[in-house]
Amino acid sequence: MGTSAAPDSSRFRVLVVEDDDVIGHHLETGLRGNGYSTAWRRTGAAALTEATRATPYDALLLDLGLPDMDGLDVARNLRGRFRDLLIVVLTARTDDIDIIAGLDAGADDYLVKPFSLTVLLARLRAHLRRRTLTAPAQRQPIPLGDLVIDPAARRCHLHGVEVPLRPKEFELLALLARHADEAVSRETLMAEVWDENWFGSTKTLDVTMAALRRRLAEAAETAPGPSRLPRITTLRGHGYRLER
Ligand code: CA
Image (cartoon, rainbow, N blue to C red; front, side, top):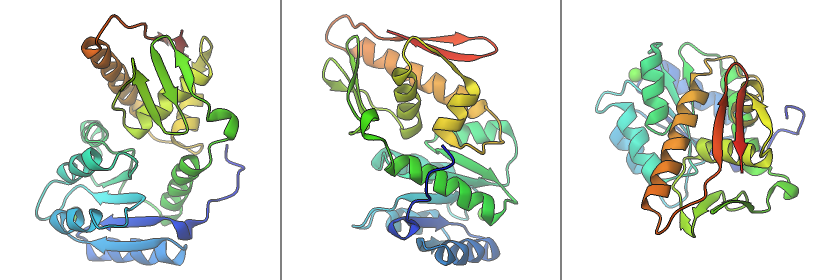
């Protein structure tokens, strides 16, 4: 990680949702200047309309304080419809609870204002690179008991029924599965699943792990028969281990 070539940004479409003229203009020109195809909308309603056009967006930069609706509702709405959309929340709210709410609403990442364009671009590159460059050796389906993880399709099935996972939940599970029965440190997980330059709270990892466990448990409950699921053990002070 960190040394691979930057992805060709001209292939990526980024929708900026921001009611502040200065920030919105700054983001739009900054993204365009770096080769991204970009549109800027000032309200939640306009963003929802734009995001559901024929050509899908790759990423959404989403201000939480919008004039017509809560940005969290925009995130929830679009996450429900576009599983692979990268959602980065832009927030002036520094309380952990708001950041957790954003991640729970389906955001993949967040930036606290004021943030630098350089940091934003680095995060975008890291996210989009992971999305496009998955080594062929890492693309084979991984069977874990009655659970099958398919990295190529970015899907996970239990007894043939798809387990609905958000992008980061899937990446976390896939990474642990590739290292099944090994201890994986929190630092490795943060670096591989989020950003090699991560300097924010690792609460993101805890929230995503809790959601992943919840979704697997729910899938097991609704499965037609008894299910053999891998166990994800918390290693205090270190990280996690997925056990077959
Ligand atoms: Ca705002």
